[in-house]
Image 1: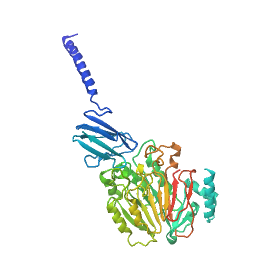
Image 2: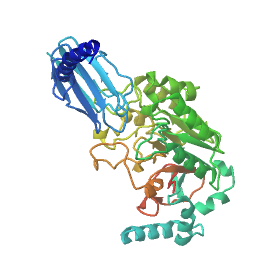
Image 3: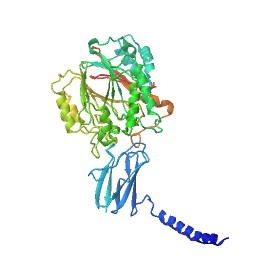
Image 4: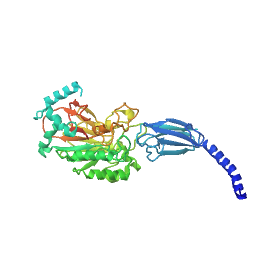
Length: 119
Length: 345
């Protein structure tokens, strides 16, 4: 091994370890089903927002994912947010910065309603 | 087919068909269309006509005419329930083109597109161009309102309409009104006509003789079929109160992708099959939406509706057979146009 190679090799290990640590660290902040400080998820399926009511801390980003075979929309009844049409497997996200209660519904199928409670 | 139903049909057909076509002949005529029924109406009296006889009808005899209702083409939809909705729409058009009597026009009761995309409307127009019937009337479905309050839809199909696309026209003495109940829907509600449209509608009917046959067409049913799935219109009662004085009112809707009928006094309600995919019967599935059926059965649950207006005096029953050669039902009617639902295959 040349001296250059040796240097590269000796650097590689800590770099690899650092990368592994980064990856391990980042996996804990990817979105889970349960709300975390940063993200929360609502699943749309069978013409239902699930969970229908979600309670989150201010600053959380809620992501709606449409698993239904029909397009839906996510529209605040108070005009706070309004998604474009969300087709199957598409998503819509909104970050709630202010505390309050945010009722919403699907403007295409208005019987579908939900609520975001921000604490 | 269950014997009881068959007997009932035989009975009714025997009682009512004085036109030289017996049941066997009637069913033979039905064969080309799959199944279905013609019930017609003249001055408040229902008249049914065996399909074979339709071409004998002299054109313009006292204002006889027919038109076809198609609905829910959902161009752009591509899922297991029907991977090729354009092809099934084409089948519907072919079927219309092959009819022994040429309809005066076509009414499309909405959900032309799946996502209100220009390309979807383009494709629809392409297919409709192949119809030998050139006059086509439209009302939007909620799927046609997905782009900024339905701007794309209005641009293409809203000429001469008011508000979100409502309008009326007269044809051979029958007054047609296209209503829009898919705009500005409120959370937790069903279809909605809205104050402005209701005012316009009331005004539109003013001064018309009560003997004028009225046909209303809108996307979402104008009577409450199943509120849990939004199958109804919150303010339809008010609209229907405006037509109470008329001797014959027919309401044609879509949205639910299956045939449902109701007669209430002089008002007959009818929903059409889709040309794209069927939906479950109310409450028989966790939700509404596309329902997958075996591929060889798809054509039987899709269809068109032939509506006949005949100025004559015979009173007959109504037979509606939406699915292939099964599930026929017979009902009587005190008023309305003749509505014939026939599957694509």
